[in-house]
Amino acid sequence: MKLKHTKTAVRAALNGGSFFLTCRPSRCRRGPTSGFSIVEIILGIGMLTTALVAVSAYYIRLLTVSELTTEHIQSGFLLEEGVEVMKLLRDESWSTTIAPLSTTTTYYLSWNGTKWTATTTKQVIENIFTRSLEISDVNRDNVTYNIDPTGTYDPGTKKVTVSIGWQRRGGNVATDTAQTYIMNLFNN
Image 1 (spheres, rainbow, N blue to C red):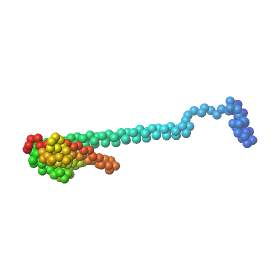
Image 2: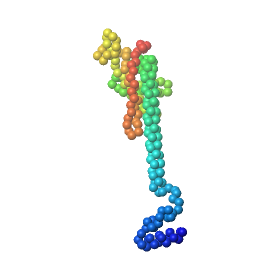
Image 3: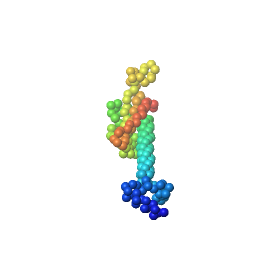
Image 4: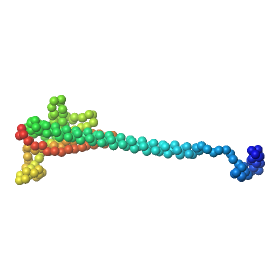
C-alpha cells in the first residue's frame, strides 16, 4: 500500500499536481504529529520572559520603597534626638547654652563623647544625614500670654526647628523637619 501512495505522489508531481490533492486524507497519513512547533516554543519563551521581567520590576520597586522608608524612619529618630538634645542643653544652662545662640545662624549638634554642643561646623551622621537646627525668637500676647507674632518679645522662650537632610538615589535631596518650643523652666 505504501508503494501505491508513492506512485500516486510521483504521478501527481509529474502532472504538475500535488500529492495532497490526488490522495484522499483517510489514506495519506504522514505519521504522528506530536511535539511542539517552533512558534509554540517562541510564544512560551516570550510569555515566561514577560512574567520574569514583571516580577523583577516589582521587586526592584519594592526594594526602593523599602530603602526610602528606612531613611525616613532613621530621619525621624534623628529629629527626635535633636529635639531632646535641645531640651538637655536647656536643662544644663539656659544662659550659657541656649541664650547665646543667634537667630540668624544655622547650627549643628555635635557629640564629643561626653557632652552635646551646638556648633556652626556641619556634622554628617553615618555619612548620609545632616542635622541642622535654627533658633527663632518668640513673641507673646501681653494679655493672654499666647504666642503671637505681633506680641512682645519673650526672652525665656525659643522656637527650635530641627531639620534632617540626605541625598537620595538620583540626586534628589530629602528633608524632614520638626519644630518645638523650649522655655527657660529652671531660670538658669
